[in-house]
Length: 158
Image 1 (cartoon, helix red, strand yellow):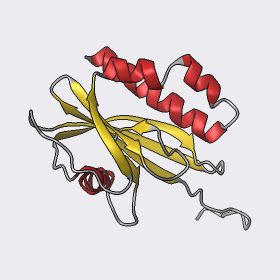
Image 2 (cartoon, one colour):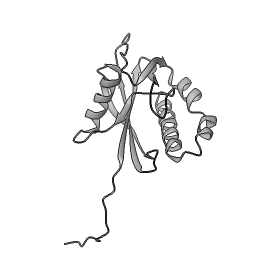
Image 3 (cartoon, one colour):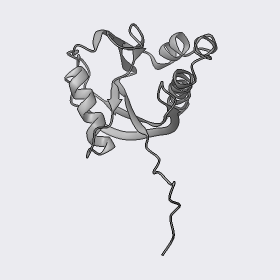
């Protein structure tokens, strides 16, 4: 039997889920309508709920935010990140697709959507200049860098 240190505490962390929803050669991005990143353009996603698998969680988030059912869901990338308060988090990025002509029905969390070329999205919203703008916020910086690295890997796979 292994003895455990009396001061030992399990590590608790948040799980972020996100999805690159493809429609042909474009991906879905949505403009946040509330919260700390109001006005920012991100892909669908959110947090993992208790007793939910990551795949169930990302399907739920996509459905809640867009009304869409997706096909071909696959885990694409995982990276460590942090919550805004500095606590550890893990980000899981998925890739999936919808049929041509499919349009989302946004919930209250988003004010508008666009289908964009992934390269255009990466260059406009995740450039070196954007990373420099969030450099003083470690949690936001790791999130932005993680999304940028995910987009770079997605484009390289292309």
